[in-house]
Image 1 (tube, rainbow, N blue to C red):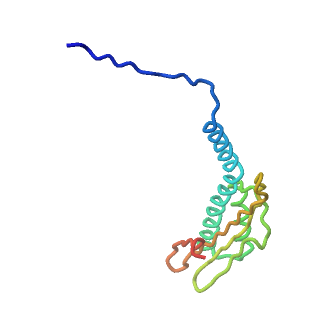
Image 2: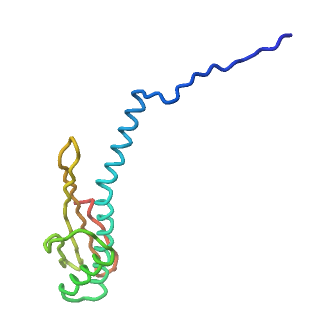
Image 3: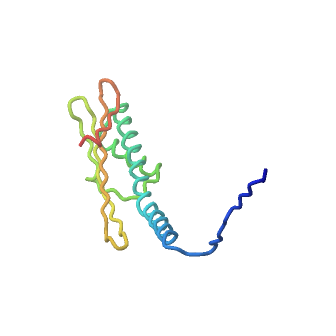
Amino acid sequence: MGSIRLEAVTTSRRGEINLVKIVMALGFGAGVYWVYAFLPNQWTALKMGEVTQVTLLYWRDHPASEAKVHDKYNRELDIREVDISFEPDWCQLYDYSDELHMECWWDYTVDVPLLGPKVQEFYIHKYVDSRTGEIYDISEES
């Protein structure tokens, strides 16, 4: 019996630029830009969630004047290095039926090439139940 010989046919395409490679490079570059432009804002929103929670816990554990709670809030912003300047009316503290609420909202404008300015809006609303001590995040429900 004879043996069967299989030969692999290969073609070398090293260094050739084609449309698929160009589209992939453009897509990768756009993805890197979007991460660079929008990720810091999302990171700040996560840190603001922590600041809100710590402030509410302080308010629950140390029933104090709103001025002391605002001082705690400003210290937490400094500790977590939240790098935005909040206007005083961007966050509100209020007591409603044995619930201590804190609401914050702010936005960023990001200039996106070819699409123009895009506004990212953020909203956090948390409250702590004074009777049970549990914290609830109702940002998504509103």
